[in-house]
Length: 136
Image 1 (tube, rainbow, N blue to C red):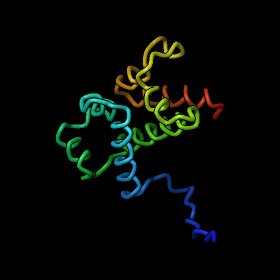
Image 2: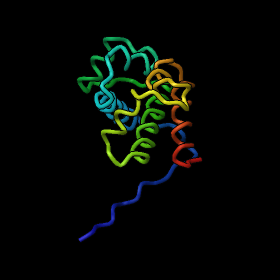
Image 3: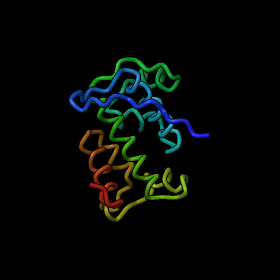
């Protein structure tokens, strides 16, 4: 028997994510980085230069305060993951895509672009994938 879940009140006027949402996003991104087989240095660089100590705490699940820059990065990374899962029916191909050279990215791997370290680098990969899947 299917049960209807209670609806969450929408708050379109409140663009802030909650502390719990930000921490859940951080845990999801740590899992994603493991699937992408990133080094700790690569992960920290993509996250905008996260300190080794903070990154180690995150890997253990101890997520602290997340500022707006970091929350934006987490959102973009989860959007990249979502787009890849739409584009590839095989999850392993989706996870491997970030390390494959891509002609549309100038022959670079998506990882090379992400390692640029800026939010704009993450947005570039996200926009590319959204365009590939016909998103807006």
